[in-house]
Length: 418
Image (cartoon, rainbow, N blue to C red; front, side):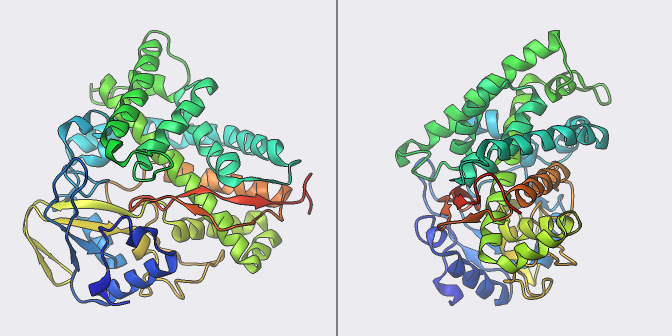
């Protein structure tokens, strides 16, 4: 595939093609000198933007990530277009901020991700994962996404925040809209994407505002109580900041882990020799296997940065105000850093992937939690239903941002087998 035939802005073409073609396209882009430039397309509620440069080499993404004062996030990190201000009410979380606002919020919310609090979560992660397998083990088949992959991170995040079980399906549906707005299964009316996004954001925000109001008066041991009452240097989160953080946490914490588990099951089905390697030493292989799953899946395919000043990257002159998209999905197949990058290898080491983002202030706050969830879920699956395997191709999410799987039919020996 030649680079001139590639259009990374084509959601209906490029991003719905077979994944092999996507790999070939990014292979071609990595080999091209400098940074390829792509035009933006007009979307239903915004005119076409000025375009962006695509970063597909690991070295370039690492360099940009380490220079947040030059490659900034404040104009939007999760979207290519500059979104209307009303979106910031719900989606203006710290992922779309620069210092000093970013560091202020991160210092406060980091109180919820201390090693002590994460250690306390371990028992709940194990309990939820065991319950998930209990619920499917006698059926011999299921949709792995809805029955396995989505349930674990959704339950853990909601339990962390103190969201009652009766509201979990509500949260799941709204997060599907937030990250799947370009997929007709979640937003059937393509002309209604803006309204759907705003409504989903408003409903999630209202849910956590109501909970925060109760916790301010009657705190418990949940994360909402900790955050609404936490103070760092005399500052605490406002209700709106808490609502935006909750949307970030529940969307990022649910969707990314869910898709890593789903792609992990797909990869083990396609590479039975890797399954056997992991089965030979479930606990010992888990650390490298989990990192390989994250590399292989790359659930978040890109983040955007905007140039604050003129600079140079990969021999390309960049001007203040221009955009770059850091394609983690492509960088995680960079042959300069990964031996045989197209090979799924549960023993791969070293594995310098950027599946949780590049180094710097925006590295994923929940990376440790995600690793624990993936580790525990596969421990349950491999020890209790070790022959679980996909029986059809995954149904992929229509998205340029999330490398998602909506449905994955799987089968296994009913009752479990070893």
